[in-house]
Every structure is written in structure tokens, then in C-alpha cells.
Length: 224
Ligand code: DX5
Ligand code: ZN
Image (cartoon, rainbow, N blue to C red; front, side):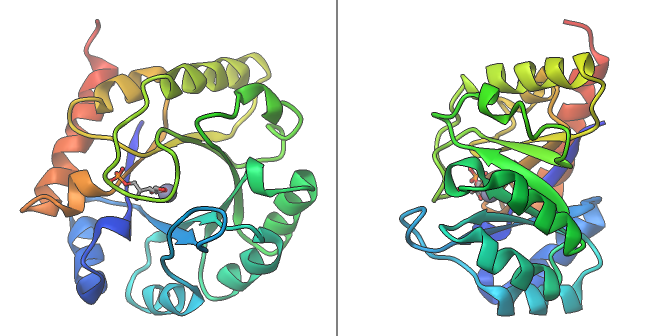
């Protein structure tokens, strides 16, 4: 089963509640919230007040992707105001094991993210304590970038390790997903597919969501 996770980075920020309700009606179960601090990545997005407002208008799980230098300070802040899942970058954490445990102790699901240049092998010691692994399929910081095909090789490696070691973490992919590559991502073993522009920059985001969902499901049923 593959879940499409709409990223509100590509939504119209003046109509966030409305846009979330639209993908919720189309079947979304989770919303991806990109937090950028202008240091870890060269862009700025939202802070805790936005999460607090979102929490009031939706029951969907709020998946927070922290692209920030100091996740130890801010993860608990986002969890307090409504984040259900929080992922931190391997590249931003000096004490990753401690940070992941802290996120779980604060009451959220804990994820670890790897940038395109980071190999899967560095996660070996934390795969047993994460709820999900997010593979970046673009360099983080901006929506609408081109998909990096090599990232699927990392998804396959993670899938293999998960079954070999009988682990339970979900595999998420983020960046450049379109109707052209979603089938391949699903076949590689991804469970959650983050999609920004290919949903919210379409004339009908609900239909775009359903189309992606359909293509992902078909990819898993049709033999190739
Ligand atoms: C990029 C963000 C992504 C972004 C994906 O740094 O982490 O979540 O919203 O957007 P698209 O689907 O447009 O590549
Ligand atoms: Zn993201």
C-alpha cells in the first residue's frame, strides 16, 4: 500500500485550510509540512504558529520535515503545537540516536532523512529505532525540482535491509515526484510518497491526488 502525502510547500498559503480540506476529501491521510530555517537550506518557510493553526483545521497526521540546523531545540516545539511525525536530517544531527529517542519521548513518530549525497549505509545503527526513513530525491530547499533517479537505488537498499532484519520502518520519498515516475517509486518499495507541485500546481489538486494514488496502486498490481 502506497500513500500519497501532499506537501503544502506548493499550496497557496493564503488558502491553506481550504487546500488541505480538498486533498483530505480526495483521500489523503497525511500532510507534509516543510520547515526550513535559511541555514540548513537556502530558503525559509513556516514556523510553529502555522502548525498550531493547521492543527485546528485538520485531523490529518501532520508530517514535519525539519530542514533546520537545530532540530533538538525545535522538534519539541513543533510536537507541542501539533506535529504527529517529525523527521530530522542525518546531516544536521550530531547525536542522531539521542534526537530520535527524544522525538519519540515527546510523543511523535520519529523519522530520519538522508540527502542525495548521503548513502543508506550510515543509517544502519538507527534503523531499529526509527518509525520512518525519508529519502530525498532532490536537494532539499525548494519545490518543483527535477527528480534524481539514483535515489530509487537507495529505496531498494532500504527495502532489502528492512526485510532482511525484519524491521518495521516506513520508507518515504520526497522531491520531484510526478505522474511519470510515481510507478517506479512504488515498485522500488516506497510506502509514503511526498508530492508538492504535481498536486497543488495542478488546476484540480483533488483529481491530481487521485491520479497519483491510482498510478501507485496500479504499479503494485500490474506485473512488469
Ligand atoms: C523540498 C521539500 C519537498 C517539496 C517537494 O525540499 O522537502 O517536500 O515540497 O516538492 P515537489 O513535489 O514539488 O518536488
Ligand atoms: Zn519535504
